[in-house]
Image (cartoon, rainbow, N blue to C red; front, side, top):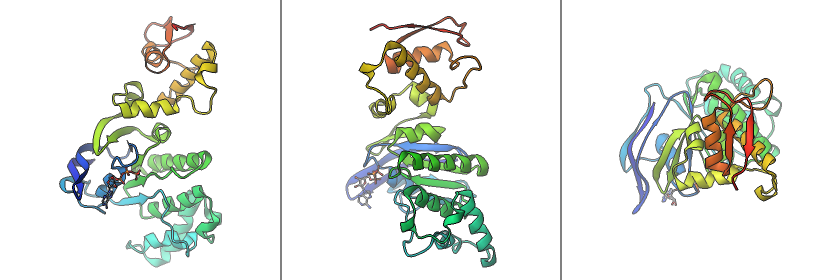
Amino acid sequence: MIKLDHLSKKFNDDMVLNEIELEIPEQRIFGVIGQSGAGKSTLIRLINGLEQPTSGQVELPGDARIGMIFQNYALLRSKTVYKNVEMALRFTPIPKEEYRSKIQEMLQYVGLDDKAQAYPAELSGGQKQRVGIARALITRPTILLCDEITSALDPSSKKVVLDLLKKINAEFKTTIVLVTHEMEVIREICDFVAVIEKGKIVECNSIENIFLFPQSQTVKDFLKDIIYPQRPAQSELTAGEHLDYALMDFAQYLKLQKSPHQGYIFDSKTLELAGKRYFSMYLVTNDDESEVESIRRERIY
Ligand SMILES: Nc1ncnc2c1ncn2[C@@H]1O[C@H](COP(=O)(O)OP(=O)(O)OP(=O)(O)O)[C@@H](O)[C@H]1O
């Protein structure tokens, strides 16, 4: 576990982080979401030791090795992809003879084996970020810290990078701590999320609970932005479409299984919450508190 114990950071007289208390479980993907200036980067810099706390402390597991990925990639422009990844190995005891095979293996893992001799300027944003990931991963970190790593990427590159992080977490059991201001990113890959507002943690919960029981205004505001991405305005939807989208969103949020015959399986509690919390809709089910076979649709407005 990574434990942040009454962690505070002041810059001049500004309390940028205020008594942060967090327990970040190992081998999971933990998100920290907040608006610009909330203190997310400072939190990451305290975890990796680039900044010292004003008070409180960061407790890391005894065997922790930290890798870091940055929003702006932090690649050396004058060096090839291969050389950029090689840089990270120079700080490890790995013998030089093993560099080539390790770098090739890592570039293959991130899907860039054909770009070894390319320079960063010749790569797309998503490809640059994958070089950043290869460079971080080659030292086999136990903890991977990600600072807004998808903010500058288009949706398809974003997906590739997030899928890669999921794969890394699943295969290497790397603990991933990711800070972002994008709720889609949290929804896509995190197991847990902490919400930071003006240097304070205002909410911390599992991903399901954050979506079902949002407490803070910050989360409610974030949720509003992602309910209907790239869809017709809510006022243009028919009641049926409205409900279909609502259910599809919920299935996606909660990673529910699709039922073999029709649609998604929901329990009635979820339907009730879906209706009441997000869509002002009243959903009636004929289930026995376990599974729903059919859904009678009704609007109350
Ligand atoms: N080295 C520093 N010296 C002085 N103030 C700083 C320093 N680093 C950060 N700050 C201030 O701390 C506050 C939080 O900054 P931080 O970068 O941690 O926020 P953030 O949530 O990561 O925001 P963003 O997403 O915009 O980077 C800001 O007001 C910032 O100006």
